[in-house]
Amino acid sequence: MKLTILGGGGVRMPAFVRAVLATRPGAFSEICLLEPDPVRRATTCRLSAEVADALGVPGVVTVTDDAERALGGAAYVFSAIRVGGDRGRVIDEQVALRRGIVGQETTGPGGCAMALRTIPVVLSYCDLLARCSPGAVLVNFTNPAGLITQAIAAQGKVTAVGVCDTPAGTIADLSRFAAAQLAGAPPGGLLPGVRAGYAGLNHLGWVGSFTIDGTDLMPRLLSRFEEVQARAPHLAAFDPDMVRRVGAIPTEYVYYYYDPRRYLDGVARAGSSRGQDVLALNEELIAAIGSAFASGGVRDAWAAYAALLGVRRDTYMRTDTQGDSGQAAARAARAAAGPEAIEPERIGGYEGLALRVIDGLAGRGASDVIVSMRNGASVSFLDPDDVAEVPARVDAGGLAPLGACELPRSARALVLAVKEYERGVVEAALAGDAGLAAIALAQHPLVPGITAARELIGDYREQHGEHLAYLR
Image (tube, rainbow, N blue to C red; front, side, top):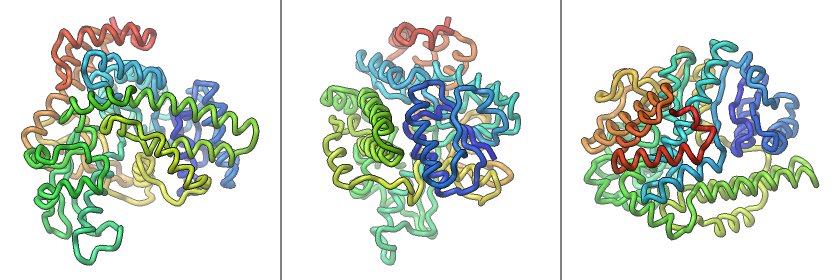
């Protein structure tokens, strides 16, 4: 069974490939990394291939810049591309920030710009995939994941599902808090019998119910939300009184809607956006891999890679919520911990979720997941063909929605507004119409109207050049 990764030179791919090979031995006859950038092919892609050698499966990882060769014969395809690279992300953020608007890669104007330059590229891959491997399933990591999955569904040529580990991470944090509160819970472990209701869009979702063995714990989670925050760093930025008033627990990206002023103040204090931090870290990471290969071997390259990837993970959302990147402390902690072994002990994050989806579809074990997929009747106030982020059962028969929880009125209002924006962005991208793109962006809750939206789209078209030249 062949797995193809679009964006195979991404900085997270060596860790993903390592985890696949170590935790799913023999599951894939080939893992093909499609990467157009020669520097990435010589660094991150090479590291993935040499990790396979170190784990005793030489030749399983292949590298190419030929899309037809990569997609031919694929059973599953992961899409993890970033059109315009890390510098494009910085443009997305800075164009918005200069106007006092949230500048984040998936939310608001930045997410709109990223989607507009990404949709045509992803859909061109879908065209090719439909011809080369018509039965393949595309698992979409490409951000903004829900919106890109919506565009793929609108095109209708391939079967696709969007994955993000944010909902599962939030539920795990809530479970850890509950475990600490209840007698008989395993120390530091998660409780069995947890049932969490969830609904929303990618990067705009809420946990609306939470029970353990039939006991409703949502009132306790809300009334003691400050204690929950102490165990869940990604929820620490939320105002507890506002969360209690809403009546559901938001996932971390809802922060940009609930407290945009705090985000803007934090970026101003830090003196750089998250995209600028990531650009510098990724450039350092790729240079370190190249230097390690020049002077040592795969284990030296892995040590340099793992340390810098760890710093990137440890500083996630730090600039946005705390006003500093936290890099000095993260680097010190990684140095004190020592080098990470090539052989992993576990796999988590979006990589783990993606593999659970594949395991289910391939008949290696059914499971319940939260993914972006066709809504059907899951979220009652959305259209059936909308892509929503909802619980689903995945098995050899496919993905079946399990039904979403009811959301409070304020959450429903945000979801409706953002979904209307998403529909408009997809329509604008398919039509190549800059005017429609501005109208869509004007409907986003973080954008102050049509005049600002037209200015933003104009600035993005100018700065992204060829990537948005199709918009007329």
